[in-house]
Length: 208
Length: 141
Image 1 (cartoon, helix red, strand yellow):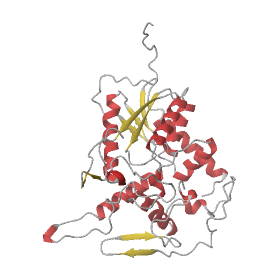
Image 2 (tube, each protein chain N blue to C red):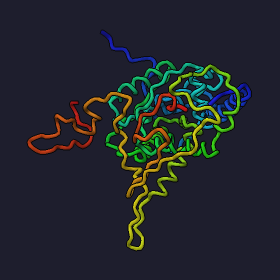
Image 3 (spheres, rainbow over the protein chains, first blue to last red):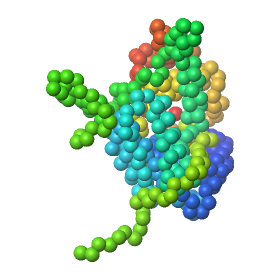
């Protein structure tokens, strides 16, 4: 996508209205919780809040969700901690205590957790970095999920068009080198057989 | 040595009495497309840590992001169609490998739909290998 001066002017105008409506909503020193993922959306929200703190004087805190599904889990957490440190914010972390097998369950966990964590820390405002493209994708994904639902009416089972929910989030990436152990939820190749039989760990395995 | 309690509560999460009122949910960058946010990120030189789940085409969101939405843009929907006709202004990365085809040379809609018994995958031309890696330029486009 290319950008022109008129497009930049339009972008600035939209930024003023959007940030004014959302970031100007909290009153002075009112607590605000911001979900940080380390990506560009949430980082931009944090950057704008940091640079306009004299104008929008909210008291932000960052909240980072970690599913413990990636081998670079701690690196992501470290990045968000550094961002919060640079912004001089308190940082909260929410770690998954069970394995979420697909996107939908992980998203539901984040949604429910944020709706419970924000009132717990007395934060009446919850800011999320979700772009317009993300909203389009969410709409399309919801439409796909609705279309692919298996129905068992009239004694006939209609099969899904394609499997949307069984694709694991920890699938092998071609760009990044993976460790042997995919995540803490799955045993590595050396610890699969314990006592002559396969052992599955449920929940957090301590001592690893 | 005398123990001193910390005078500042900075970086220490101190929870208070939980409120029963639900918090207001806001999306400050909800009015911008991903490419615009990427432009702002490059302008401000913000540090990023990309999520690894965004670089595969395995999960549903990635399939929608990298196959379905580009298909709708090719079909004439979406915002990128209008902005392509405007001249370039900023110095963008010019990778010969990642360079997108110019207007007019864009290939026609050649969508390969692999349909199996209960499995359908959308693939763009040139990506016959399933689950091919996402190019770096596509990540935040």
